[in-house]
Length: 429
Image (cartoon, rainbow, N blue to C red; front, side, top):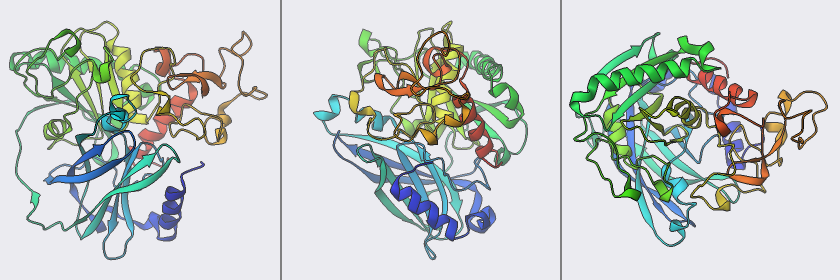
């Protein structure tokens, strides 16, 4: 894969320092260090600043695949041994703030948004680094560094609320499974049983969808029943505002169907004692809508007829880093969301700048690139123009896919999903 200069250097550094010999127990305890931080800025610049650190009792992530070399996401968290400067943990992720920076509003205003990452709790003094990707060069640049002393009195070690947690499916040790956590939003205390039933129903919809159907035994599924003061969610464009646990709402960036919350602190508080690799926030409404960001969270509604496929689509974003493949629907982003002179990091779209790093190996022999959308090719894997919100300059692997119009996942998306399952379950990937 063609990667950004800084991450290529990082990879070579890791290789030369014996990444394969990094053992979890040498560096970490089986619990989490949560770091809440603010991202602030506008369309031209951003910076990060620490808000708080917390010790939390559960670690559900890998214990062997400690270094993330997918190079997905707009940000990376890197953890280095302070004494030897060795990279001992890394993970890519996206944020809602990153999306906001590509809107017209960000050209006029400066804002600050709370974000959160969790890393395995270090046994020794370490240095944590947050880096952000610059779309102009697709390289990562340091936004914040933080010296961490695991015995520090400034790490919060207090308990949070013991929310009702239901085990929907348990297949084994969280370290060797993908831990999917459903969180209730807009369910009152009286609606707890409805939430549990809804979460179970949505888990079944995921495991009935290829390629997840073949990997059901690699997942643990949990449901965290947060109680909201009112049922439903905000619909700000129609003047509707509800008292809910996670402050979710439609009309994100002015788009009526875009359902999100900026309240990452409340989300992380909800899962403080639950093993967690992936979060899906289930919103108690029958309206159409949703949202999802890589290694951040995904969100959908409980009672809309289309929600089961919306759920799988949004989970594709948050779990496997898949891009939207549609190009004709309303979005809030301007054309700068993707730099057409660079290869996007998402595994299912390409600008053809470095197509060899994407799904070229999955194409039938003699496939024309780009691929014409005609009777000969339209049902085969190819390189079809249109994707990533643009009709020109970005290409997708199939005419139809879950990431475009809720059709079955294409081969490129399916492979990306399986690779992420392998990574999180400590297999080779």
